[in-house]
Structures are given as C-alpha cells and as structure tokens.
Amino acid sequence: MLDTESIPKHVAIIMDGNGRWARQNKLSILRGHNAGMLRVKEVVKESDRLGVKYLTVYAFSTENFKRSSEEVSGIFSLVCKFVDSELDEIFENNVKVGVLGDIDKIPENAAVSLKRAIDRTANNDGLVFNVAINYGGRAEITRAARLACKEIINDIGGADAIDRKSLLSRLCDLNEADLSKNMYADIPDPDLVIRTSGEERISNFLLWQIAYSEFVFAKEYWPEFTPDVYRRCIEEYKNRQRRFGSR
Image 1 (cartoon, rainbow, N blue to C red):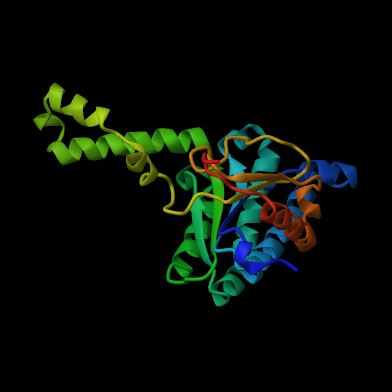
Image 2: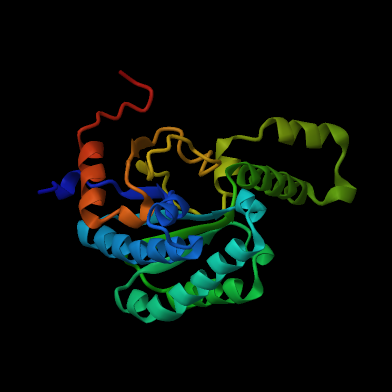
C-alpha cells in the first residue's frame, strides 16, 4: 500500500512504445496509438485516486512531425476522439486540462478540441492534467527567453525609447525567475519523470523543469502501462532520497 504522504506532487510521463507494441502484436501503428490513448484515461484516473496534483504527459513532440503523414494525422484524430469521448467525465471529476506546446501549428480540429477542453475545465480545481503536444523543451526555453527580453523592453519604455546601455544592463540581469515565469505553464517542476518502453532518454521533454526530478524507466510499452505498473514506479520513487544538490 502506498503511503499517501510520499506521493509525488507532479508526475511527468514520456509515453513511449506504442509503435513497437503494435508491431509486436501484429497491429497497425494507429491501433498502437489507440491502445495508448486508453492507457492515458486509466493513468489520469489513477493519478487522481492516488492524490497526484499534476500529471503531464508527452503526447507529441515537435520532432514527431517527421513521421509519416498518415501516422501524424491519425494521432491528431485520436486527440479529437479522446476529447469528444472523455471530456464530460474529465469535467465531472474536477480535472483541469492544460496544454504545453504550440497548438496553433497543429491541425485545426485538434487545436479546437484541446481549446474546448481547456475552456470547459478552466474553473476545476482538482488534478491538473497537462498534455504536451507539438512540444519541445529547447523551443520552450527559447520562447521563454524571447518573451523575457520583450518584457524588459516594454518595462524600459519600448524599443524607440531604449538606449543601448540601459538595455544591456537589464539583459545582463536576466535571471532564472524571468525565464520560469514565461514557460508554457505555471506549474511546479516534476518530482517524478517516468519513461516507458525501456528507453532511457529525455527526448527534449521539460528540459528546464526536470533539473532535480527523479527518473524511473519502466520496461513496459505504453499500452502495457497499467495502474499496477504506475504504482510500482511511484513506489520506486518513494524509496529515493532527494537532496536537491545538498548532502
């Protein structure tokens, strides 16, 4: 039985292995992604039950656009399907949906579905469920730096009013807080990052936020990631001693 006092506040998951699971079971890639979508529903429910406050899942990276057009369009169709089928239950369970990534550059129907989920659950105050879609950690950091610089320019009085010395002085004072507040979402850093399928890579996921996260690598493909496997990962996290740079 898990000790609720040691449950991570924020769990981030790199959902890996849908394609390999499909090939192993002689199914189409899209059948693999569909099976993975069903696991998302289970993990959201289990997170809520366990008392996790934030759950962030890596659904689609900026690099995933390199895949075949059939697979990419299929994934975004599944996003629409998930929202259509699960939004009422998500809302009724007081889950709040958020998105990390540039959704203005994904297919319009998927962007509309995600924005509908965000709007519908905006006032919920239970589990915060973040979907990282068209997301890249480097792109997020670059975007945050750009926004922070724009804020400095606006604070000084606009581009026309800035002298070189004042601008350089302010830019040299740019700090972590300036970047942190310009990330896609104002959420705590993940306590636990889980990657499925046995791979041990970050894959450009939450590069800024995972500086002191604990990592657990599960051998199961994402469609095999049952609530039992999830609890096993949290149990492993529970036995870690986090130092955050101290002794």
